[in-house]
Amino acid sequence: MRHAAAVTLIMSLTAAVAQADVYRSIDAQGHVQYSDTPTPGAELVHVQGSTSGGASLGSAPPTPARANPVNPAQSLTKANEQTQETLDKQAAQKAVQQDVDQTHVDQCAKAKADYEQAIQARRIYKTGADGEREYLSDADAETQRVNLRLQMQNLCGSSQ
Image: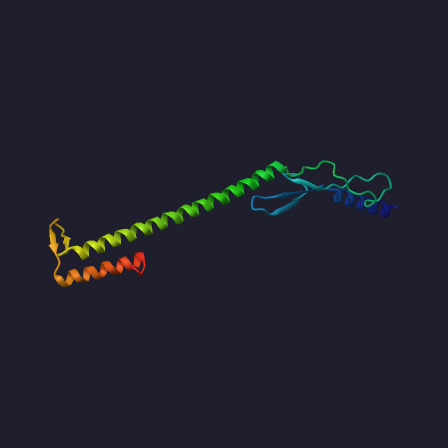
C-alpha cells in the first residue's frame, strides 16, 4: 500500500513539473532562448493544461492560455531602422568615394600646373630656410622637371 502511494506521489510530482509553460524570446544578438519564466517581449509557445480526475496528460491538446505575440509594429519598426541604417551607410560610402575622386582630380590639376610652370620657367628656384630664393643648376632644374612629370603621370595617368 505504501509502495503504491509513493508511486502515485512521484507520478503526480512528475506531472506537475511537466505542466510548466514555455516562453520563447530573442535576445539582442538574435539568439532564440526558451525559458519557463516570462520575460518582457517573450512569446508563450507551450502551455500544459491541468489534468482533472483520471485524465491522462496527453488526452487534451495544449491550448495557449495567455499568448504574448511579437508586436508586428515593433518588428516593422526594427526592420525600418535596419533598412535606414543600410541606406545611411551606402550614402556615406558614396559620399566618401566622391570625396576621394574629387581629391584625386584636385591633385592631378595641381600636378599639371606645377609641371607646366616648371616647363615654362627659364629658371627654377626653391625657397630657402631664410625665405630667399635659391636657384637650381640646369641639371637640377632638369631633374626637377622630370620628377614633376613623373608625379603628374602617377596622379593623372600615363597619357598626360
